[in-house]
Image (cartoon, rainbow, N blue to C red; front, side, top):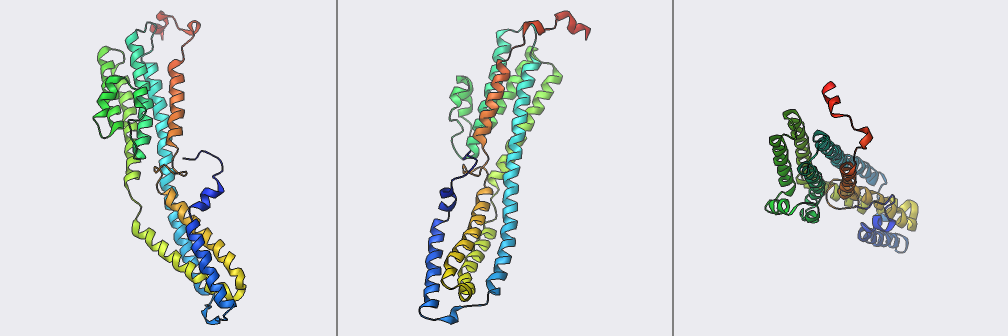
Length: 303
């Protein structure tokens, strides 16, 4: 995804440059026939393309709204992933915190946090149909990496390792039963968010609906020069190109928004979001409670 505030002008019109070139040539031919060869019978009432343009505007507006709803739902889901990732890190660190921590508990925290960071990147990569294992060898232990390699769905395998680790923490006495339930609920929410993303990814926007709108748009563009030629003459060429570009850009915008996980400039910035989560979790993991703020052990029994 492009993370700039302003998408380059060349990129926007580069998506429709072929269509605009053909439309320009088409409009020039109509203008030359009308002006130089005085073929006035080619003009039609302006009401014809006007009515058709109004219908297409309504259809494009509806499609744009539906496409934006898919894009916004995807962003909303990843917002929940951000919250649940932070929650998981906070729970693991706070539930296992005590005055006499051993190396096993510290390694347990690091393993969960690093694996959650890997999960975010793996989910984004898999939704974009790329290798979900890319870069995970830096964030996972060798044993964990070899385990997830055997899975088609890497994020699912990582959540399974999470579940095994929190069960181990329960058996070791590092967390109690209630804390185990809360951690499992957080994992369930992460799994639910992953399923929602996969639903959006695997639900194809109706192809026939897109084709009908596109054919109607082509018909409107084909009729437009005949409707405005008698009013504007040769000036109908830039007018037809400008109007056609507006409709085509709206159509392209809807096409891009309807697929929020396609690694396009308009998709959900999953890599950027995962990077932000990584920064937050690593800061939480590295933060140490100052010695003077520690509550004496006997105070825990007084609470």
